[in-house]
Length: 242
Length: 242
Image (cartoon, rainbow over all chains, first blue to last red; front, side, top):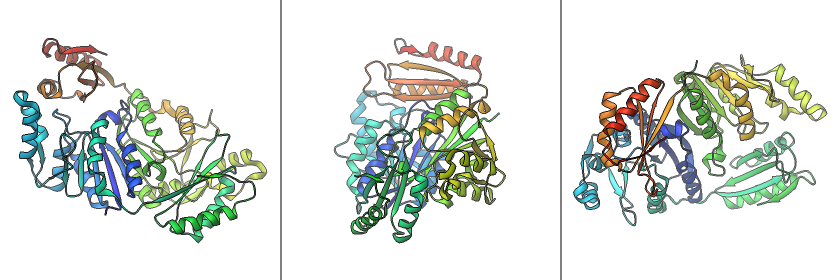
């Protein structure tokens, strides 16, 4: 089961501020829900060398990698070439994808469309049903499209591959500031070193000053840490636990 | 004048899907408007080694780098330490920042607060007015906070440092698909190789099928490319230019 993941968004349109990312935000939520820890998101331009270098690094560093974007029929769609270069294999036409494209486009099928049948040599096709086109998998790298609607459909079709032991979360909202809170957090971490502990201040929220997040794959350990943290907090500091 | 920029978001809360990024999206738009090309966004966890490695790489590869997050008083705020390690300098207490914090917190000032007076040795403070606290600059790396409201205030205070020759943009909306369009784009790029040409399909938009973006720092060249592209498009393909 994958424990860690990397996400690679390929697209000048995000870097130039023309569109805001939706895919990484979606995928981070989904993967967390499945129990997978996302360790990196990278956004880079549609350039073969940069894609190759980043895919090679992420594929080495994480259990699974997801790319988003750069898989259409035009000149700026160079993700397949980049992934192939990362894996040191040639780009080949995949007969199954070519067949699906022929069925889909019929007489209108042209060379530009057939670019979408190209894969790095040795690629697998996964999650073909119920989506129109399956997802290309090269070693541990899943190649997904940039259009959010299709990105989600394709991920939904393969999501159960990634299910792992869940990561449990408790949110503690407090009305003391981070400066006062810091000591309490340090002491809690000293006693529960495996705990994932986050501290998120709010500067214009009348309800609370800091949201503290406690996370662990070990539910009993999390409950112990939570009980201890609540017991130690100064009187009146707690707003709520959620 | 900076021509290229990298953005580094530091924060488990984005990777775990708890919050969606607002700072990179904002900064990409602003920098593009100023004429700066963002070449990479990286999102990584609050871990000193990862921060150090990424800051070192971005600082070497781009003219300017912006970090977001990890600058508060708690255990998970390790950006300063990461930047210092990237630059191979120690972390020191900056007297100006310590003074500002003393003024701000008064009698309530504690060691946790004073952590926010720490900088990598040799750091400069920039953009002190009109924001409450200036921004830490280490070589070409600007250290900004993760809270979007403060991130923006601080960037606003230094934005004019980054103004460069503008990047001009024309959007052409067409009602032909990318498969048909690909040839036209390839030919246009062959004749205008310095043009930045993007192609963004829409699958459920009744108004158009593809948005084509033409960009250049050379306005005359952009106008020539646009005129040529429009002249070549098949009859009836154009929806609008914007």
